[in-house]
Length: 312
Image 1 (tube, rainbow, N blue to C red):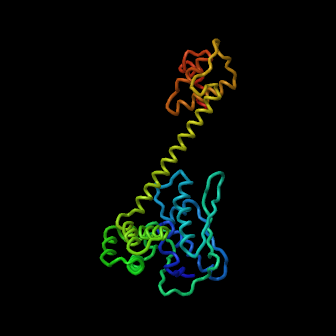
Image 2 (tube, rainbow, N blue to C red):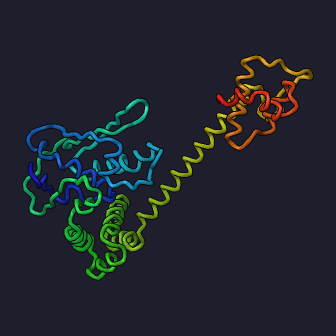
Image 3 (cartoon, helix red, strand yellow):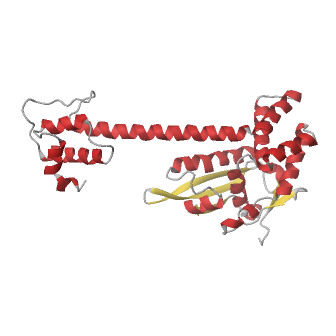
């Protein structure tokens, strides 16, 4: 296929509001020649590290939470591609052991579509360089992107040249394009026309509502993750308490005489104490359970079973 991997009509992809959607399209369209030769589907298999690198995902984002990574980097951008282009894209994770190690991406033409005729207005998608410093250069030309956006805003939605130059100067082409695409999508959904439509879209490009919404979504995702983590810890502690007969009120049922400490009970109690020592200290209900077995306090128990505790 040579250095020039493909040319395709701007209108088949633009306007995509997600940078990850653009990069994924560029990545898949490197293989577009196979579709044009009659192959029904194309695919690329990439490790998780390769996906992060090729889609230019910041090193500190979506680390440790593969579900968040899939939602933000893959699911939402792919949904946008499937909604706004002539292609259908999907992926399947593959595993090494129990962990997701990477993904296989698939792409095909939607039903009723096929190879495009030579387009009058095209852009070249260059191969994604293995050098991270070269990634920005692998994207579409900023001049082309600005010209396309200008045509869409002025000829498509009636913006003046002064209005266009003003918002581009304030936010930059990428931010304006993202907000313009979102504004158009929502204006279409609301069936807005005329001056009310232009006013609605203008509010998006002037105030960068798209970034505000992304921030709110990230905050909601973070709060939801914290709530899940808190619930998991509470469930773990509840199970540990239940194993020792501690009631929902936090009070163990203590007989008048010391309980008989069976080997199974001792194993459970050692597990609870070891967990508590690494998660904020031993709480009062656990101390009472220890005392129920005839120990003066938790210190006496820990001292007696110090060696066994090291194994937990």
